[in-house]
View 1 (cartoon, rainbow, N blue to C red):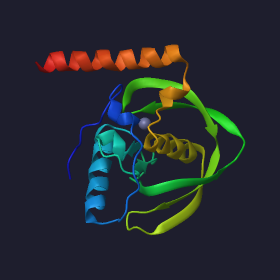
View 2 (view 1 turned 30 degrees about the horizontal axis):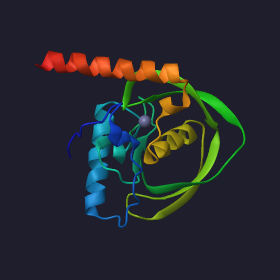
View 3 (view 1 turned 120 degrees about the vertical axis):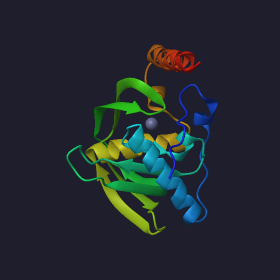
View 4 (view 1 turned 45 degrees about the vertical axis):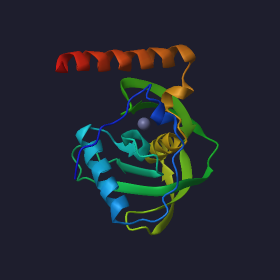
Length: 174
Ligand code: ZN
């Protein structure tokens, strides 16, 4: 396994629309293994393949709490089949927008289908944090970031903050 570089805003590759996976094979599973390790290392609770520069419809996630055993989830070609009308604000963050958190309103439940790690089809309801997280990650597959839901001013501030942090990191390394 390997830790991959996570793209951060304003990298234009984050705006790509990801392509469906044609076959769930060992190559896809190796990418998911690397994505999971990268996500744990960050640390984060969800990661889409496009965030590591692979515009494929693949997501990894782990919503286990700190005192719980790891519970990795893998989603290939996920689709949201329906959502409930009720929305709740939830404070979101993103590994591609490090150290920026803000509230986004999303439906609190959604029904989705996807292929799992072995390529088997799954259909289920997601609620609460699972629902928020899968909707956030699926937005990545369309090139949408959670800061796109914020006001233009907040979005500009977020991107400026990330750029500045990146610049300081590069200077430190030099
Ligand atoms: Zn994200």
